[in-house]
Length: 108
Image (cartoon, rainbow, N blue to C red):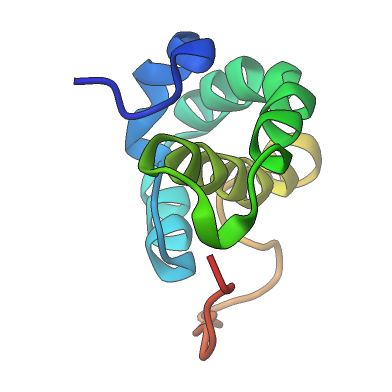
């Protein structure tokens, strides 16, 4: 069963990045290897503009499940962008034992 809109079937191998909550995305990022994040980034980043255009066709509070999953996938892409583009590691450099706790999640 497809998780994403049919127009984004090529991203189905990365459906495990369709995570609703920030703490889930952050935990997955920390548990992922750089090779896994790079593969996800390389597949999803070129599709980001098309994904945003697809999502923008519908009001956020009326998104069907497949489009909502696509939005969550985009959130995960943002979450891995700094580790892939800048840090070359899943953790924030020089952050020691610091951690991030999100108190309020995005509206969608």
